[in-house]
Length: 105
Image (cartoon, rainbow, N blue to C red; front, side, top):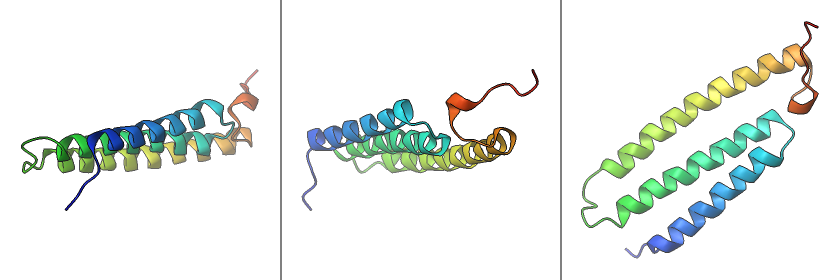
């Protein structure tokens, strides 16, 4: 089986990470910011698998196991993040981070 080169995997991962970072920095919606964070976590997972696949001892299962742990953490982060977004929307009636002000004053 012919797999892509390590450089190609790392370039793809870097592009995916930069897309996620741009989504986090440029978006005005909390849900899209969370989606950008998920893209960055997926880029890290691609790096784990790429380095595992191109390692001389790739018979070891450390790379895929690390990705499984990272996916579990990402799923938990998404659940907690969406719960926070719902709570913020109920309180402020908006998901735009710039429009949120302290309602107690």
